[in-house]
Image (tube, rainbow, N blue to C red; front, side, top):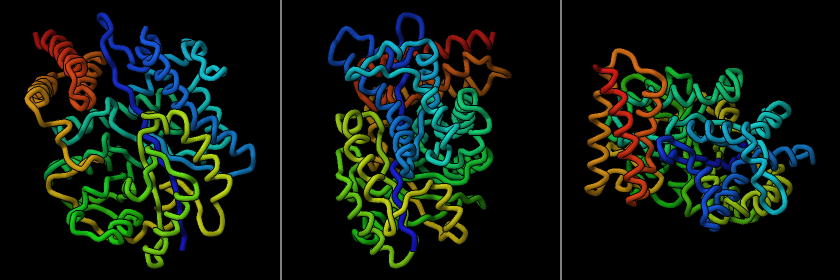
Length: 404
């Protein structure tokens, strides 16, 4: 039976306040007077372009590279703004300018659209377990609008999968029902989840975990169902910390053996820009070697949607935990602690006020969605808490004016 490997990169940068306007954190980093922060920003910019460049290079060498990517909506908009303004033309890494990142993807997609599986996500990287379920649709719709405005409605129609920011699976059945309803209404066919979200995960043996993680499933709530794939756990293949092509290949064959004759899908997913490995090593040291030397009779690569079209007709149902999960197991990093709890209460009240408006202009809606950015709580530092509180205050000020 078919054994398939597909790496996935998740891309996001939050917005921050500079003076009286919101700008992308990537821009702030690159322009920083701190030489280390500025250099890291340049490396991150290159990391955002790397998939387009390396896939184009491999295709032109005669190979068949594949990758899954998701970019938050606010990052996509920042990349387009900085690309079109020429900002990245002045960003040079190891003697080569980063240049127009968005155009690099458009060139690749115009020639080799089958190489990339773009997935949808929340516009402002909202952590779904921590925001009101009434806001799910707004975050999902706004991402689609951002993606379509940059890449066009034709490419948007090819986006069939969904990435939950931080792989945050909502708590309680009513929230899962709403999530599935929204995703299905917005045209999504499948979602990628962390294995830790599965009911009984802690009691599974190693072999059971790997079999579960490399097999397609479906979840069903309230008469609605959606297909599910899983990210393989980092103790199986740790993409972000660095893995050799040989080791990843052996792990894929191990997954194939454990699957007992079932089609096997090995998806390694991580942030695409965080840390030395992802900024400097992933594509030149791992990705190139893997797709040049490891794809063959025993192991193939294909996009998730293609795999599900071939092997996803009769899927078994899998149960998720009542309390949900994330890709760091639980929800503590986004909801626990007095400051996080305070901001989440503020967001709940902000959401109620926003939904009480008869209509909201584009800027008010954007501020409201950006206020739900997960980074403001996750990092747990004064700087990021202040960014969240200021965004909430700015959104509230606009909402109050509209309510007069």
